[in-house]
Image (tube, rainbow, N blue to C red; front, top):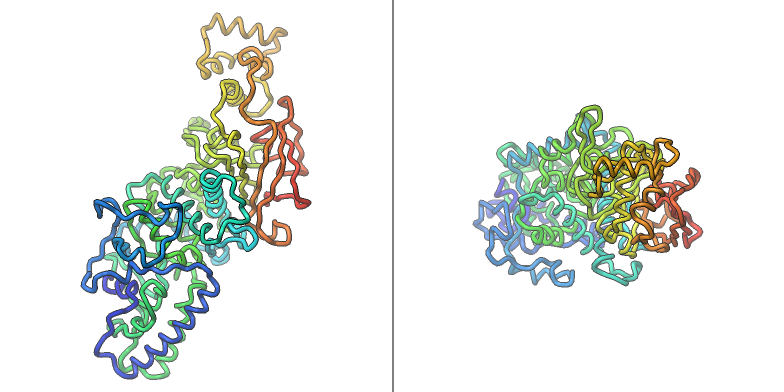
Length: 581
């Protein structure tokens, strides 16, 4: 396999001296056609980056390295993202250590099969697979907003969008979102993907790469070609251009020396079809062509994506990144987090991603629940979110009493939340950093009290008072608790109201959240946006006095927001009302 992959990466720079005139002519025809097709492909994707590093590999290197980074080099070159986030010209990358070549060992193959089973179940439905088959594509009117073409992949696209917005909010204060250059947005996308991969906390990064040429990987890592003659020279690859500029031309341009013009013509058409980066693959074809690259540090992953941006932008970019997250985490750890693997993570009929998939993208752990830590349900320990996450999560399903979202998700490190409805995921964000400032003692008290009031009644049983005080590290001696029970429940009704509790233990303390702030909303489905153009919508929010909330079933957006801010009202600046669906 090594020799075949080297040919694919290097563009077939070594031509065979034994190629017959017929073969050479046909090869040159394919090279010309490939060149034309490449130009057409570039007109569809405005930002596919080439890989000069691959063409600089030594001709004699039959055993390419599988890892790169700190372990491979005592003084690694800086990442293209390191200096101000600016892209480097390809010529500046020539002195860097070559990136590893795509490979597929037995362990990766086994784990990819297990990941496929976790995601899709026993059978991959073609219609659902097709809905997930899209690249990362930006809106034409909102440079940093990703477009979701069909329902389903929001379980990946929304978390990626959330991390991209987090980077903008924290690293680019005051920037006008509509004026961010497209090349900068590509850079931000790569940073967002690297953030998600880092959350997996893995010893190395295993990136899934799609090789467009036909080939079946075997257990020993070799690849079986299905071209007319796998032993023929690759003269056409040499004519097709530098390595990385059209990787598919490198591995599959091999013609039988004595092939007839008719068979060459048919095969030529088939190969040209394979060369098109936008050609749809069946689920089996897609999975047969997956290979992997191993990296020791995240800077090398960023460099790989910078030099192979087409892997993200073309038809299967979302799927390839999702598989990379799963493989980096490791199929066994993912399965252990899920605990119940009987149902696939992607719904076999509707195509939406399950909560375990969403949680993996947001936190690096594929747990199935959104509450804090563990909960004992009927003797079973069900795991939720174990620490404060970078990106938050709130959902309309909580108001419907289908789940309880814990404080770790409702109060993330950055003012960005993925919002869930019953059918879709969107993103809420704000430039107001005080929305996620550290909790004041009164906010901690309110949160702990409410954790003992899962139904949101704003009261608890008097028998729970001692547990609440102990959780807050307040005095919880039996005599003191008995005194407080009488004081907080003078009519002996058996309940303690939230307001009475707060007035007693946290009087006159102001909350850290501002009373008014701006919120912005993103929905990646064009049809859910005004004029079918994906963009951000801004609104002015105000927190009313008191703890009572009005349930407005006719406005799912407000209802969802109230699971985080019970007394919120919001006025959107546009006539178009943002949608959760």
